[in-house]
Image (cartoon, rainbow, N blue to C red):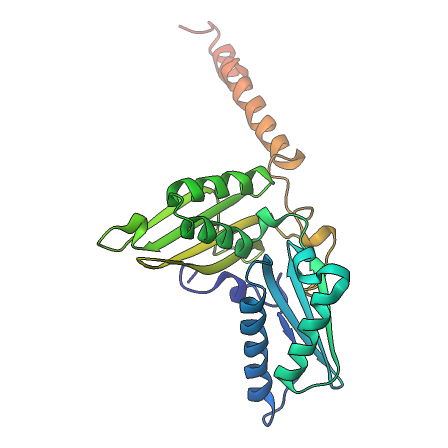
Length: 268
């Protein structure tokens, strides 16, 4: 199950929130869903170098609120905020709504976002950088930022070979079956002269032990790595020390010495 289901959809309502927040009845649900898809497709193509991680869409009383999570807010905002105003006018024409609001949230640590990491690898492959080198550099930078593990899978005509194949790179741990484990996932493509190369990225940020804010726009301590379990912490360290003390007692003759004393002559 963990290998087949999308890790983000698998954790919705548990430690992840929905990227579209609105209510739709039987009459307008399909139209709103199609509109969300159009908005995301348009913005991804319109700002293809803006480092977009995700686009959150909210609808309240006829008002459309689009929040763009990006690692390069300056590109989207533009000089004096002119680029945002142009994007807002284009979204009004696309959706046919007059009340459109655009919010921009900066991602402080882009190395821990699967979409940005996958997009970085894809851009390097398109610029004819060796895929192994690009992937290993991305993995090293992600682990350096404090992730517990990362897995990257590339499929296609890697290196321009005649026969398509898949290669997987993995460091650390990515337990997909553990629902409390915060795993970010992305599937991006690199368009090369010899065809498309698919890139899948899994990033494990640690365990979420307490109740997490499910609002996808929530930016705070719990949205990063601060709520993960410290795997070298006091609890497990204490258990290891206790086990070590018990081993030392056994080696030092704590139990055996008692049996030998009962025998009267020590060790024979």
